[in-house]
Image 1 (spheres, rainbow, N blue to C red):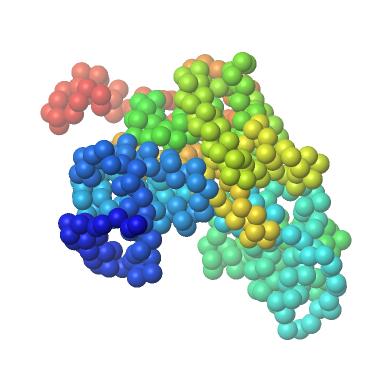
Image 2 (tube, rainbow, N blue to C red):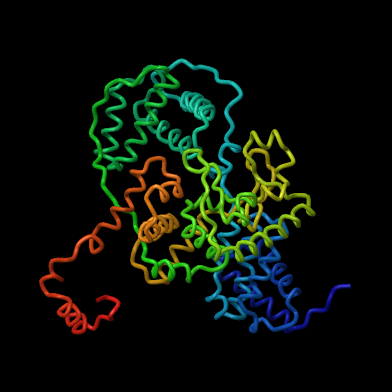
Amino acid sequence: MERQVSEAEKRFWDKYLAQLDRYGVRAHQRRHYVKVSEHYLSLNTDKKLRLHGADDINSYFHFLAGLRLLSWQFKQRIWAIRHLFKLTNPQLERGFDWRAWIAQAEALPKEHPTVARENDPIADSLIPEPVVSHLAPELIRQEIEKLKLVLRAGDYAIRTEQSYILWLRKFFRFCDKVGESIGADDVSRYLTFLAVRQHVSSSTQALVLNAIVYYWRHILKRDPEHLQFSRSNRPQRLPVVLSQDEVMRLLTQLRGVNHLLGSLLYGTGMRLMEAIRLRVQDVDFAYQQITVRDGKGKKDRVVPLPQSLVPRLQQQLAQTKALHEQDLRNGGGDVFLPSALARKHPKAAYDWRWQYIFPSAALSTDPRSKHVRRHHLHETGLQRAIKNASTAAQISKRVSPHTLRHCFATHLLEAGHDIRTVQELLGHANVATTMIYTHVLNKGGRGVASPLDRLLGAKHVKEAAAVYGLSAAFT
């Protein structure tokens, strides 16, 4: 027997539907929005909507995370609840961080480096085709397939593979050639075109050259000839580093899982994807350390586990374990593993030790196998959160997650730690890379006293600050 709906309820849902119409929600989606809102209300019958707070919304979204929803399904529910509060509690709707939840529900695209190789397999057969004067897409595809085969046999990083494929496609189209017909003049013309017409950076130009040289050596089996071309000027840039006060202000503006991730980046010196991809077995509470697996250059290293983060990290693990156990009960619970390991130990994907510490709130569908599983968070969520936090903290420098790695290194050197220790913690192959942080310490006011201050003296500097109304922090 259906529940009787009062006139007041009918008027309320009519207003809700009218609002959805005003904001362009399609007619076939509106009934789903209503169902989601009714579901939220059925779980929160103890108080009126105008008395709800951020904790109530967060609690509901945490509940949804355990329902094994796909990314679009989770986002649809977020928007339904947002429209509900836009109608009933505009102040809460404006103040709640909806984008943080949308970011946590972001699905990994098929070209994401975590799953790119699973979604882009090498063709079963490599049939050579004759080079013709008119370059057909099939010819380019054949060359790219050969390149992928050699790169993967050499265990190159997925980012390297993606970059080489991108630029070689452009190169083939530019010179309208593939294979043996490509000559040194074609390479020189293309690199000069990139530098002079496209104004690419020197690092991009070097990347393109590396891709072409690799193709010549490993696919064409010949050494590159002497090349002459215009090189882009390589600017010498120092890394952006925040003061300890600025780091504190930045971290204070972060919330939830983004606060934990940001604190880990600063407290360990890890790169963004190294932190995002952490698995349960990588954290050793007994030895107070974190093992970074398969870092840049295919190297493992050990970084310190900040003691101040232990309680929060253990809480995150407890939440992740509860979600994993719920996934197992619902017939899921497997995680992405490198293909060789997945073949050797097929049950390892369900093992708690292999689970990501920072799982996505929603599930992702593998475009090739159609297998549904839970991946790690998408890194854009933390990138956006740190950008917004730097604005809220009124930090005028350009801040990204990698800035916290720069701060880790610089602040360790400031504290008197030797350069070799910092090099090992950062995972740099060459100490010259780490030396850039000593240049940061020695630049500007850290290295020399301004001649103006020597001319005027400390007394005059303080008097000038008082005249212009500057605080003591600027003197």
